[in-house]
Length: 412
Ligand SMILES: [Zn+2]
Image (cartoon, rainbow, N blue to C red; front, side, top):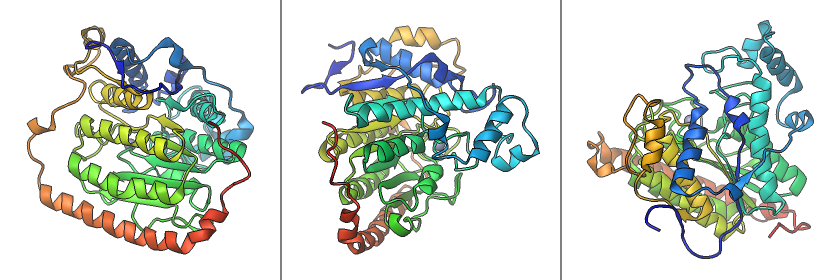
């Protein structure tokens, strides 16, 4: 099995790839950095490697406006619908619509609703027990707020998926955000919710949009201690990223004991991403995805939903990053080389030469400035963060346990 993807061994869990062509309609503007082509680039790469079978595909189910209104204000939904019909009034700007980041486009409401429906479908498959894990690469719109579009995101598919898991299935959900930008929308929507923990590793808000995700944002009221933020220094490299991940994520998940993990796997943490400043490689990103799968095996009976997110190096970085994500989730091994058929298919569309190998080689990169300072700063921040959180978790103690819904059995 040297050419194609091979199962890593053991029993194959039921893993679904939620997809249809309509998901690519979420295109904010022709020159906008958020590129819908990333879906087709990844899907075709996965098919070329043999890692994605037809049987893994799952349809996008319906999502009602009533369910949409559990996360978003109806006045905001109405403003999005008007703007999508070309009738953006003066109030649109107050809702974050018609900005450089979030331009208005025809049928915007329908297009983003479809992306949200796909994430909710992924959650439904896993929460109902029909699948162990599910992926929606079109999802990951983590900046969308209750009544505001932000950071390329109109509606928050992740929050809608989490709501479905909590409200319809009584699950406790741990949301893990590995996008380079802080997942502010999801965090604020569940900031005082006892059933949802949000965990994020991101470039520090001191340097990068949206400017939040500081260690002192730890949740409020019944959600106190359930927002976990690990801000990373610019130029953070693989070893420091993985060390911070290991210091924070397993312990936070263990303290919360979720029934389901929802992973936002934005691919913009990579060194070549033009919108951010971390220096992480595909190898480390792949390792973090495999670790999340391992943690879900240990803590949630394997229940995991993963989405895409940011990622602005669409031809070289994103398809490989999300292929590694799918490979981790599906439990398959990718070939070392990018298949020639894929490179030939897309060579004419990419301004830069397409990569030849599935992971990159960080040892060939020039050394980053302040390497030792960056690592020791990240280590100190992670240690301090965990000290603060451990104190809060100890105070929550049996309170946290009392919020468990022990009257229901999780699927599988
Ligand atoms: Zn991002």
